[in-house]
Image (cartoon, rainbow, N blue to C red):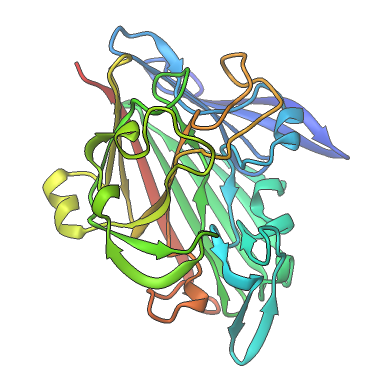
Length: 343
């Protein structure tokens, strides 16, 4: 029987080995993952002509990830997205976090999971990456035991599953920061997007939620291109950085949470998730000094993030659904990415 998962030494951080894992299916399509940051390094799937190509941004070596500050492909935690004033109250105590985005915390600051070393377990077609995050890591209460599972199927579906248990009440919001580009080149302005949702979380100019839920209006995606919403020559800061609330009726009607397509390659991506919404980021501030999979450094609008997750800043917004993970209870969420073509 052919091995579905192989791995090789990729580099070292101090005396800790870093590995690159390859999960390959029966058709030859594959994904690559590293235990550094539980990072999704690559996804290679066919276009309409059957040619394999990369559909996510990433790098060929660990050094480039160590230099990256755009979270490319990383697992994000303990709490994804922004937390206002880098603090929250829980059980009558105030917890101060790392303020790495002005006065606010973004993706949990320097203690974020994107730079953590994970352990691993290998099953037939699943890679399980494990992390024991200590109490007070990044300022968060409680030790957290985390399992991130990557499953890759013969029909080109990637499932990411996040399971976590803490020994104290804490807040948890986990996702992956993949940048998708179904063409494998240029920008994502011509990509067509459909989101099974009509509402977004209103935010201020620093992307901090105001607490209001508003109609998506001009930001509603029903097969529109990214350029339809932000123009064909957007400047840095002109893009979309918004949390979209998924609508259960629309999900049933559309048979997906999100759909992304690109006409030149003919590639399609549909997403299904247990999360209540997703953060859409058009890569306005994307920039890398290191070359990516296609040999060029990444530039603004070179990739599209579709980060399924809980509500941003939920611990400071009682009007939002709670992101509290009670002591000894299980956090269990999934994101499914199904790749195909228009033929």
